[in-house]
Amino acid sequence: MPARCATAAVGVAFDPAAGPSLISQHADTPATSMSGPAISDRTLAEVLNRVSIAALLLMLALVVATLVNRRDARPRAPAHRAPAHRAYDYPRQLTRSDFGRPDAPWLVVVFSSESCEGCPTVVDKAMVLASEDIAVSECEFSKHRVLHERYAIAGVPTTVIADSDGVVRRGFVGSLTAADLWAALADLRASPHNLEEH
Image (cartoon, rainbow, N blue to C red; front, side, top):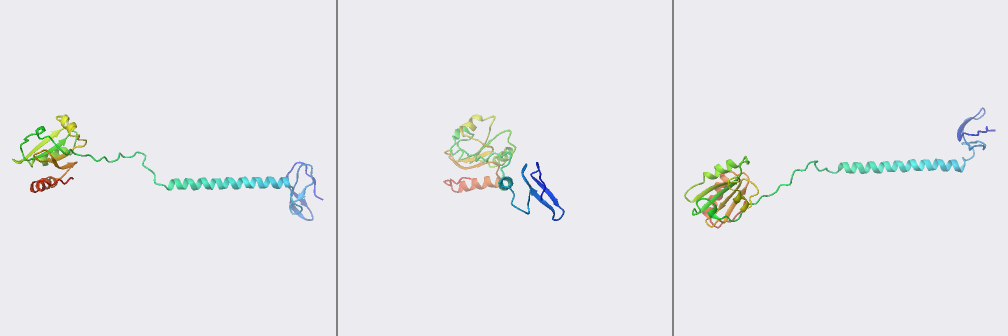
């Protein structure tokens, strides 16, 4: 006959003939062996309830881990984004009287700034082109701010080649090679109606 247990819910009973066995018991009820009759409905419900909660917590942890892994797999934007490149434009028409030698058939203007490191090189390349047919002008920002504003110069160096009517036939924003400048002018002089843009 199993012993009575007043406070333990689950315990171990030792029967000298049968050996140790698990027992389940509610307060003031006779203990029953786990290998014997079924445990009480209340105890079974508590165990199932705890197992269900543990299973739900495990599933929730798996879902969270999956979401974190997916988020980490996506490419991340840099913390400090570089500003998007802004394409600068050049004027399409010049008033020839704004620049030296308005009577020359061709005008090369380099819009520059004292703070521009690459501008002196471009100005030097343009000045080599000066001749009887080609007027070359540098329009430096601090000295000719009004012209920079009139022609909406947003980036320097900006180099333009205009015909006798002031129509800009070629324009370059940024550094350029002497070969680019010479080739553009030679092409325009050979075919004055060529309006190709660069």
